View 1: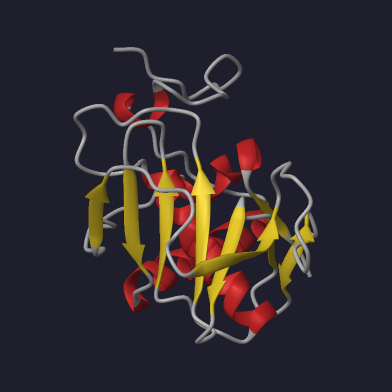
View 2: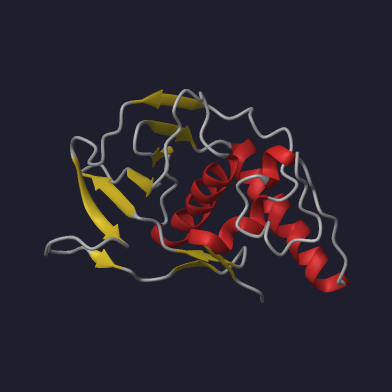
Amino acid sequence: MIFYFIGGFTFLVLFFGVKNFFSVDIKKTKPILHPFGYKIIYTDQKIRRENNVVKSRLLKSEKFGLQGKPDFIYKNIFGKIIPVELKSGKIKDGNLPHIGDMMQLATYFIIIEEVYGKKPRFGNLIYKDYMFKIKNTKGIRKEVIKTVDRMNDMLNSGKGEASCEFVKCRYCLCKGVCEFYIKE
């Protein structure tokens, strides 16, 4: 089984060709790192010592062949779980988070449900200037699974199609070496 590491720069592969993705329930607010009434149960960040916090363990979904390290996972006394992903960039006046970041968080929804046995109702994407509360919907999960299936098909067949548009390519880390890079 092939595992895809989700997080950081290696996630770029997952969101090539994602279309019609914005039927997602998203709420934009000011950033809040620690949700009220929740405690940290997992982190991939360097934090001061806290009891019962799992640090930097790679979380895996055997069912879907996914693995990753969310920045934080919070849990309240009722067992509800919230994954939180921190981003170093800004959204500025945009009303939506970056699509790759949403896909990364949606992938964590799937992994967390398998690892912890609880389906997160939502997760938070936190940029320097805004936070987005992303609902864990059937549609967003389906998009991740379809993307993983397409990646597996490409790996098995050795064939794939590039989805090139200036909007997608302009901030891509691979543009310096990509034969498909489009300059406007």
